[in-house]
Image (tube, rainbow, N blue to C red; front, side, top):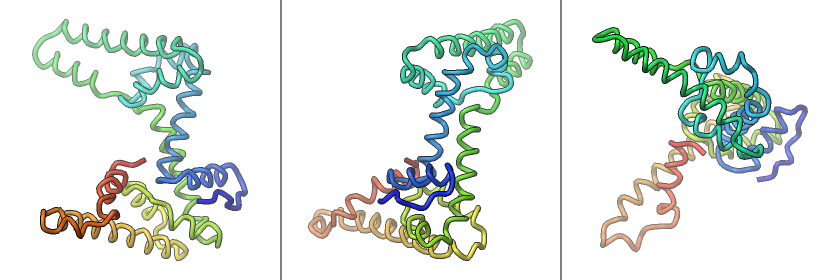
Length: 225
């Protein structure tokens, strides 16, 4: 898909790039925002005592972004930053575990339950912000003759498609996008059912390549890109 969409600002440029990359453009925006946030944390926040003091108290990393922290660090040149942050997080968890071991019964269970309930992930929060901006812009750009068909053709994952439809509300320009997206889902269901129907020994010769590809498409639809 061409990325030569008219752009008036950085949001348009990044959306155009995400559309051109293929796959769910909202997943692409989310991934870019999260990656940039991880890179910024490694580059700028590791030595920030306030940021480290707030880890596991005011902000945290979800399981996925905790694992990706060292990946971001290696992109930057090493693992010093991630080592420092991992040390701070584990030390805080260790202190919570030791505090729980100092009491018994319900008090111990409550302390461990509190340790499990972590603050919001700082990286996910930035991803959510990027997605919100992208959804609003896609709804706005749907009325543009160049953008409208490109938006309608995006293979959104199911969660992001529903988020887009919710953001669109009754916007008239989104009607062609909605119609095409729902038709895409209808076609996928038809091909999944066709695969199942043609899977028996006496009907396998009727199976199409599109039916064989349907399960992988459904995995991306439900799991995201």
